[in-house]
Image 1 (cartoon, each protein chain N blue to C red):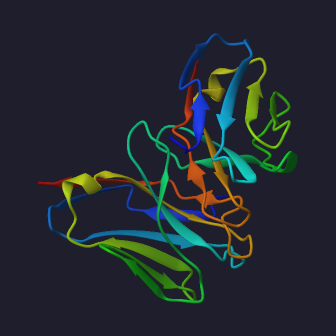
Image 2 (cartoon, each protein chain N blue to C red):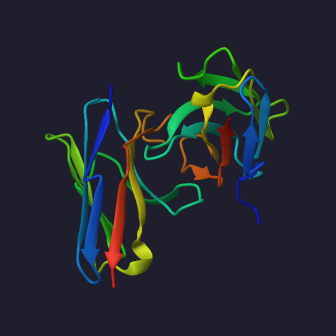
Length: 112
Length: 114
């Protein structure tokens, strides 16, 4: 399967803990995006990378959130000191610059 | 501030009927308007997309109609089938025709009754 893969698919954590999600994009894509989707809502843009450079961050991305794409391939999204409001599906997508976005199946986070 | 407003929130259509979902946008700089289909437990998948230089685009049973002056666009699903039952999202971006930083609507939960 050469699609976008995300890991883990589900994460349950206690409030205050740190969590990290990984995304492996389609190998030939140079752009990688993170979105957040809460129940009954559309995906909300968080941030995106072109190669290893983080080009844009939404104001939704508080100081507790950090994303990296160290070698321009896979990316990680870390949430520190999780809060119940962080419970959501975290979606990764990849594309060529200006091209169609291909989404992964998401990582569902539940904060107790 | 919701930049893309989608309606209806939910829709029930009989098999073989036409499903119509509408979206309105505010930002006149938007220049790329895709529709995504999402099944439970899956990520959104691109269904069809349009750019503002055309008023309609058709791909199989799926058609986008675009009204630039009204700042509205809609998805029509002809001969709707039970397998079309999913959540549909409209989206828009202002990235010069590409898909960067998409703004999504809130989604329409479509049920096709057999």
